[in-house]
Length: 188
Image (tube, rainbow, N blue to C red; front, side, top):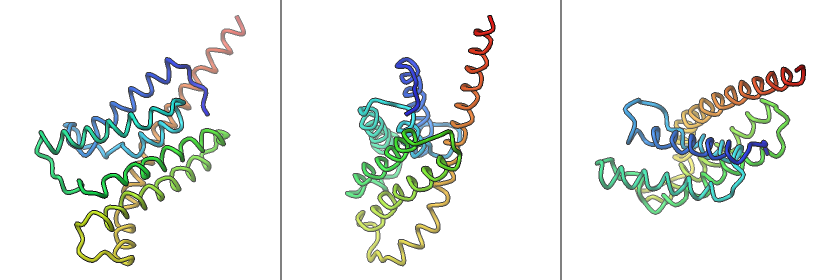
């Protein structure tokens, strides 16, 4: 796991929560940004040590959805019994992030594999769960799910990769700056 101070983890956690709030389902932001929810859960798994961060972020996501539906006139299309499959969906991203953080060696290949695999399992739960268990589709079939997977998974993966890639660049920049400062301090 990356070694961030408690203060740094609080700042990162607050920034991740803010990122989710301004991008979640386009309910609250005036900018048309892709949803960062998947990336928030993955990055929280990588960067945040406390386990309570996962339920806190899930609670935030749910509250944002329920406020948008109840008070802001957003569609309730996604609100169904399948909604609760978002727990294992987001959990797979969280665990993918934690696994990467434990095993990582600053490898972009490892990061890419963790993102792709976490996103795939997440989509199986979120997209597959919605397709098969929401009651919104009269006769869901495996072939129908594969068509949806082909249509929607790349877009979800692209959004996740965008935010994780930006986070990796920011992290690399901060790490390089910190290393430079340490070298300057050592020289005196």
